[in-house]
Image (tube, rainbow, N blue to C red):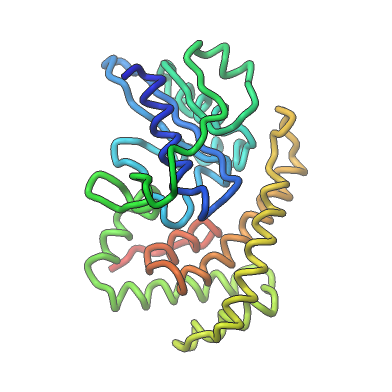
Length: 274
């Protein structure tokens, strides 16, 4: 396979895995060649700083184009076109671009000028359950591993301590920011008290989360290719509020590792897991 074919296949698989879980999320994969000349694939999304949704697992051999430079992450946070973000990340590391594939359907002069091997508007490879990225295998990373591998390893060793750790971070998420909605607080109080919310409470929070997530997506910066500080600030606020709600929802549908990932992407400073 050519570098472009490899990137296209990777993007199509990731898009399939996230299509039902997180509709509207855009992916991009770039193939770079450093000093060694060997190809390396980099991946990102257009949510947050390479945010990965619950239930999607990226290949271990595919670095995330984020978390290597805080200034870079802050500047291109949630940038509409992930192909431009992954290109800028690879260039920031001093590597050459060989090919880029993305689900984003609009062309970019910046990307086209970097390499002729570009695929835009890549569609999902199939049904979500058929995607390789929908299964956590030895060759794929849980999303928490991409930002905090040591914490993820600790959570796998001790499930009881892991649950207590996740509950501690959940409490920080709930009380360290602006007051959350009544639906969120109702769920939060039950979880923090080591209880369990009612079905109706879960449904109300899920409904609010889905609506707010769509609203946050409409605030992503860079749609017209121009940096707008006010737009970025509005999006950052909405993104964090969505991750705060996701922290709670992961108690219902995810694992302790998913709770911790959502809390960390909401801005909580997670201590080392002992």
